[in-house]
Image (tube, rainbow, N blue to C red; front, top):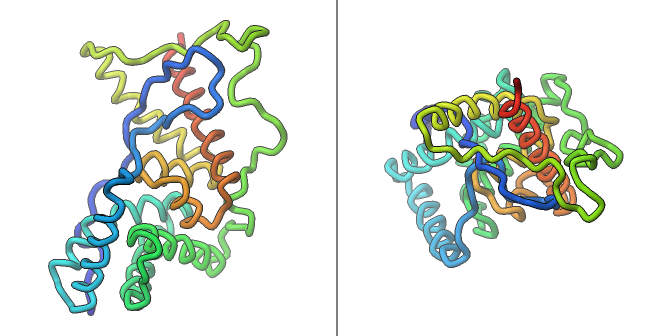
Length: 249
């Protein structure tokens, strides 16, 4: 089966920011970016849907192929850019599609089809980095921030852990507030791209693609503990950047 894997691709981008409302020091509050994983009640139905879709794909169903590409091509491109940068993203996605259809007969449904595809893409990104002699070290998904750097400046809390200088909410729905939300999207994208690779990859998968933590660990080949650290530090940096932007001047 030969196809143009770029068909069905849409525009890339990230979701809008959510406002922090915590009144005490957060351990790991909710996502900075909108998104969420599937409901537990829908898991069985999703697995059955994946199985049916794979059967149709193996039978050469063109509509099934178009459906899969429409669903996954843009998220795949976004993840490839996160892992390897824009230079190799298209090539990595093309190689991933080829590997997916070559190996589809071996899909066993132990994870979702999306997770399985993303795991192949992650491996292809590593291979591409090695082949192109890019800077993709073995520890590329380790957190580069070593030591005990606090997520929030300790000076912002009193001795009991209450805020001395709490975060500024940004939930206004006035025309000016809505315009500001658009500006925040630009800030978020810029700050997301500035994160270290591991933090960026986990945030994209968790808060943009809506993958649950266990799937993120499977896709990236990292431990649950490492996933939590990467997610917490990445979210904290984005929140801090947004707060600086909202309170400037």
